[in-house]
Length: 476
Ligand code: GLU
Image 1 (cartoon, protein in one colour):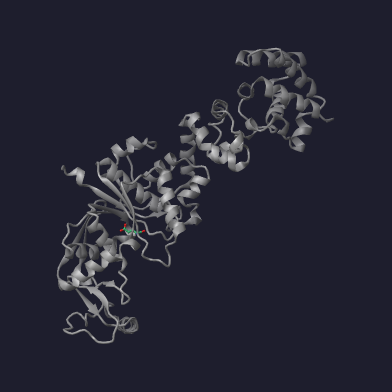
Image 2 (cartoon, rainbow, N blue to C red):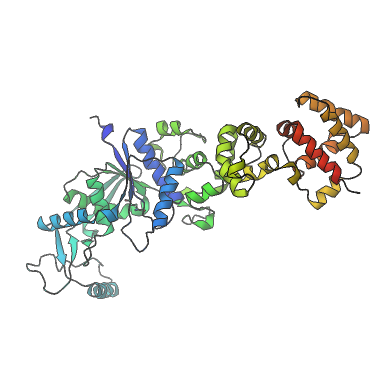
């Protein structure tokens, strides 16, 4: 087996919220590492904090991963299914003298902590239970890991380089509470060891856990994985990213009409760069991504750039594909129903006229509406109707109607010729004729070029809509 085939990368979210921007970026970097090097990508849910982990959040994280196209080779494993394994490892460490029972109660520990704080002394556990020869009867016991105290430990970080921690700073960590439940820093390592994880990529808010986790990993007799700690993502005010900065969950971006490919492209640039290239296909990312080009400083979240990227992706996605992607939004809007979906070809042609104007699928869905509703349901705003459908414009509409009724095909040349002849007859500019026609077709005053619109709508719809507008013309 070659070196690269052994790569095992994991993404290990704690489901205390939906998959947010930071979590999604971590997932993506892990995924790219695995895919780029032919490794395995393992999804593991760190749900031991039961008071904060909910099923809804677990579902939402998985949904977010699927939607982003970050497929995994193993899992989702759940820590709550693995308590027996943790227990086995705790027992083993005790038997090997690498962990010990501690009989100090939380109240005692808190009192000592306060005292130390008042004296300005070290807050570390004083180690009084470390060398007990006999168990203390009738006292609940937690289990502590014997942290090595001499010398230094070096975290060799793929992004930050070598970071040195003094072992004397590290506490004898509680690995099991007195009720037997294992603690976070322990179970993470047991999982990484058991799952043979070779690479751990996570946010740098975990960096202080890493020296402890390395010691535990060694005590469990396993090779230490390679670590990479990603700089945080900040809002434009340099505060830690939150909803306040317009950052929401991955599934919320989906619902707001972002394309997964656009969000992936956006996420990868939060910390990684390849020259000044902005747009990447997924294959390119898999090929080009490397930790050498991940920045050391915090990335700034910029919602306008995400919107710009999304608009770029809408422009470059084939209309046929967009017709699939926009369908849930059209259904949500009530523009179409499951039973009355428009023909794919018609929808694609309508979309092609709008891709330059819609930045999200929500906008695309709204702008598509006039193409898809029944002719009889075109509605004009009161003011628009008065301004554009009146006695003065009525003759233009009638002449356009007559002209269009007489041609077979709605080619650009045919349409232009008809509009020209009406303009000449009434001695008016194109806008004077085109705008009432636009209102007749769409109900509003903004749309793609009028010839494009007529071409998509086709003869029957166009004539119906013109007739409806003629019938509603009002006195100015
Ligand atoms: N569960 C941790 C989190 O959600 C990640 C820990 C890790 O990757 O080791 O931040």
